Image (cartoon, rainbow, N blue to C red; front, side, top):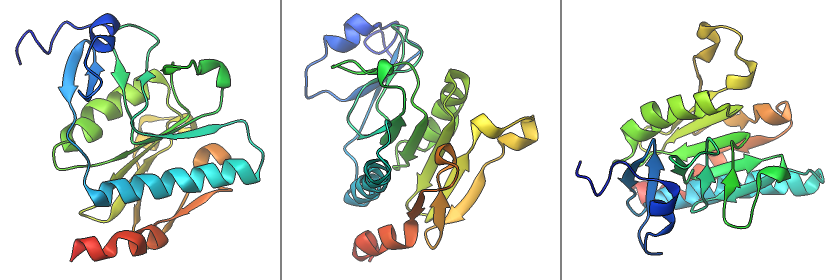
Length: 193
């Protein structure tokens, strides 16, 4: 990785051309490829489910889908663009981005993002204080859910695993909201053929 990608700051990130899509973690730029259509359908449907739940319950949380910037540690070295995320403290929102940590983050794994989503971002999100983190694996048709907020010991950090036939409960809302992955799969199953 050359100097063009390392030792970066928020100023460098904001100076990028609008058509360049990168994330910055610990001052390192990571290029982001365009998502597949399956990825987009899954992200959109999860975001819609979260948004519908919030609206129906007149909640203060807001659901976002990528691309939207999250300045994860409120420092000038880490900006991510999670596929879907929920922020319940509106004081963390400014016009340009989220300052600090979302309550819930969902990443939909693409072929080029496996290591990033399952290792680097997993650790960063846990360190930052994300309450709940979902990793969706479209090819394997599975979802891993990390309930960081509810974990008391290291063994509690193990994820719960679901399939695309399951309804996945949302922990930050005490399981009152569920995402029906069977329904989501129906929306994009033709693309698997």
